[in-house]
Length: 183
Image 1 (tube, rainbow, N blue to C red):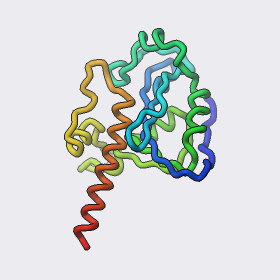
Image 2: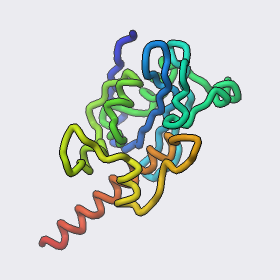
Image 3: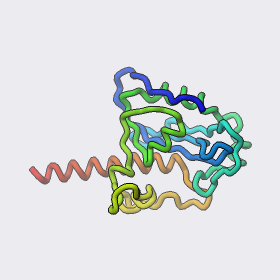
Image 4: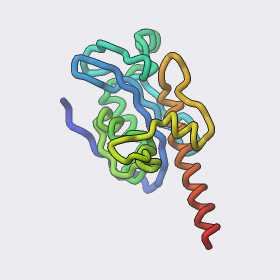
């Protein structure tokens, strides 16, 4: 297993990115098979299929949205984990803020260490507390009044990363209005 890579200092820009990864089952367990990164306005900045280090034994399509056809049809767009790490480290500096849902899982799969994160599963806690977490689907329905993850073909990391950004923007606006009304 390769070591994790730490994000580096950037050019001073303090950017916000939405990040989501999809996983498949290999001989080693769950491994990264897709990553999507969006800007704070929801624009797609980066999306790649990732070739797992071990052979895929189950594409986990119900949850990952990835099938064998995706890997055969997009051969030129498939990157290794090392290549994806290099791409992301060029884009995401140490000062950047990553927004996602269950980000510890995504960062572990990416083998990247990053300290500035906002995790929607923490910001919007389950009423029973940890270790329980509300699903991203339920958060989007409750707060954004929108259905996500409805496709029979599984989750979409682009849709999920955008939903995380939108949830945090919703929360910031709500907290701002509450703060203004309190004064």
